[in-house]
Amino acid sequence: SAVISQKPSRDICQRGTSLTIQCQVDSQVTMMFWYRQQPGQSLTLIATANQGSEATYESGFVIDKFPISRPNLTFSTLTVSNMSPEDSSIYLCSVDSLFGSGTRLTVV
Amino acid sequence: KQEVTQIPAALSVPEGENLVLNCSFTDSAIYNLQWFRQDPGKGLTSLLLIQSSQREQTSGRLNASLDKSSGRSTLYIAASQPGDSATYLCAAPTTDSWGKFQFGAGTQVVVTP
Image 1 (tube, chains in turn cyan, green):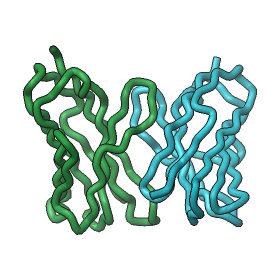
Image 2 (tube, each protein chain N blue to C red; image 1 turned 90 degrees about the vertical axis):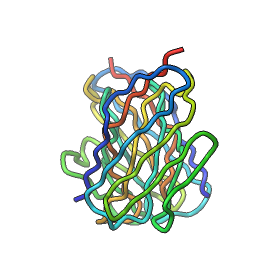
Image 3 (cartoon, each protein chain N blue to C red; image 1 turned 180 degrees about the horizontal axis):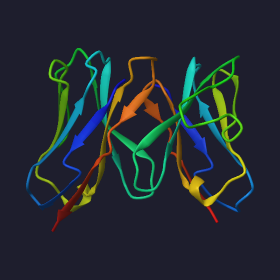
Image 4 (cartoon, rainbow over the protein chains, first blue to last red; image 1 turned 45 degrees about the vertical axis):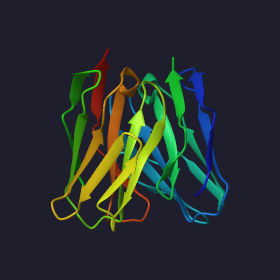
């Protein structure tokens, strides 16, 4: 099965700034998924990232806030833009029923 | 739309007791179902993945069953230990796209020594 590497594992950021999270897979995959887990909540899907096309966002998530890149079949990035404390969450990428180790983001 | 419910929301047991965690899903046209463990502030650890053709999957003290017809899965943890204290999440695929999962809210487990 694929191996997923996600980084950074954690970060503390100032409000108003942006953070880009990277997800690398050791094999080519068609679709990659980004999830968010807010404190005390379960995981919610943010968007589906397909290579060569724009990401598909779930209800409540928009590209301006969470731009996603998918330059090839093994890599994707999620950017959390213009951060506020409400963006403090764990962000996870997923492929083929596997999940990355997550990025714990704290916005101060 | 797939909806996943986990009962109970929280569970506290003394060490040595068996744990039974329940997960129900609304759309039975799933290709697998997965159980995860999550420690506070951490990412997910996959425990068991049951393919739709399987009725159960076992790993050590853990056993997960899957009944697609009734839309239920159960995670059993035998002879619980304090180290089993964590939140356990069930995830079922959505049926609108391969690879997307709907998560339950989780069961928070505390095992007391």
